[in-house]
Amino acid sequence: MASVAPVCCVHQIGETAGVVWHTLDQQGALSLAKLAKEIDAPRDVVMQAVGWLAHEQKIDIEETSRGRVVSLAP
Image (cartoon, rainbow, N blue to C red):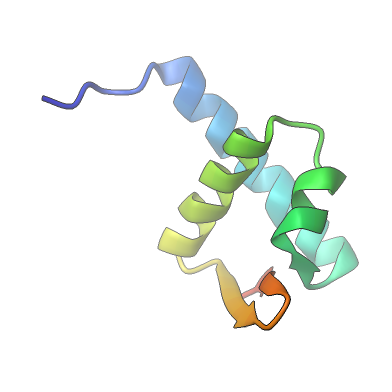
């Protein structure tokens, strides 16, 4: 049985999602690796925030020959 994530964890992911969105708004499309380095948060939280934004259709993730590139959805 799956347990519910503690509220503080969900809050941290949500806050990081906002930072991800603003970073992409200011800098444009970034690779996932570059995005994770640009944001002052644990990599796993950044990836969870990216997943949150992708689920909400706020960002696009494009597969390239060099990896994944994240950008704001139009």
